[in-house]
Length: 167
Image (cartoon, rainbow, N blue to C red; front, side, top):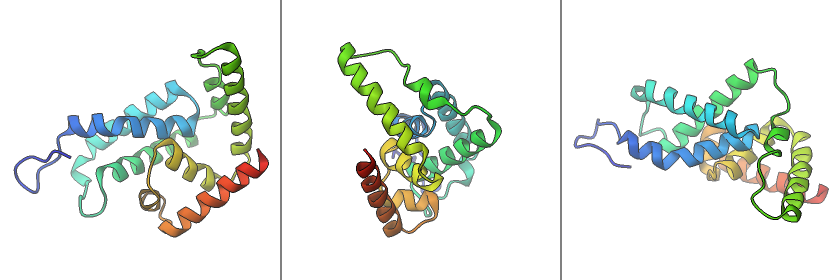
């Protein structure tokens, strides 16, 4: 991260934004299954981070972890106030990029994974979204969720094994 001259200075927000935008967006897209909603929630996340930038404490967490924590809270707030319950199906309707056969396989796999994910407990879905959607490390996931790093690793391993067994 690019820091200004003194140790109390804030980071270069343009650098933070460009570096962390894909990670936050992918996490929210993975959680919501809806690109437009993920874009909106990503925007809200960065707006909230900008407003609360004075609360950031570099000694407690890196910017990536801090932003993922904000994104998680934004997603939770949205879920509490939203009565929409089928965003994953909307994401499956995205325009095709490959051949019709490849797209059919992708849609089939997406539908199958969505169905398997839907029956997982919320905690497991959240951890998988952080791991595979945001590309977060187990340590970052532990910081965001309040679980221990080893517990996060165990949950990921068991959940992936369960999904493979059910596939």
